[in-house]
Image (cartoon, rainbow, N blue to C red; front, side, top):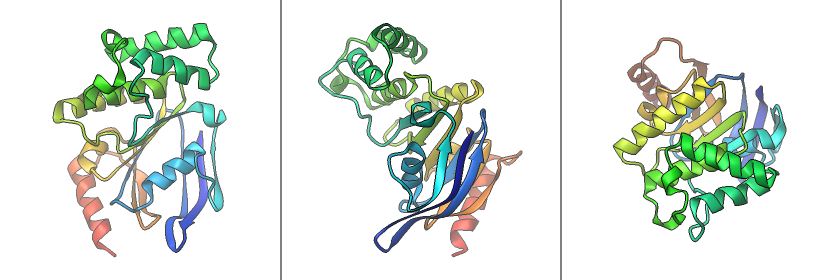
Length: 226
């Protein structure tokens, strides 16, 4: 279970989170749509434990080690190979040497990157770099994935591959929180939808049977209402 209750956080006079509350259960994916500056990244950082909220609380069963983070930056070391990066991050996650080697092989195979394991990260395309970042996020088999604009910089083919992969992870029972300003790219993955503006959820509801186009139209109306 992922639970956020009354989250509030401000940077000086700029309020990034203003009373945000929601919960997710295994198998649910929350897509949060909002313009730049709406507070989406701050929310994900609070959920990940990277920022302590000034009010309210966020809790994930299993704590920080139950979380996988995919953000704007890969946090991979360019001079190291893909495999070396995974082994390094596996040690930070507390995995034994044997376990991190096995998990590195498993996630690279799942992401069709086994043949790239020995290549330095600096040589990867944007799409492959994103796959390597996802491999890092999955290495410790987290129950929750937090994704901050994961489609940024990807071409259409790479974005399509990422949507398929995230759909598979969702079907595997993980909880996911996806923050994006692009409704079309995120709506297909969502079981629940939130619109965030000026730190608040101005809409939060199950997706239900709404199409991506219907969600996009509702989002535009919500953003135009003030």
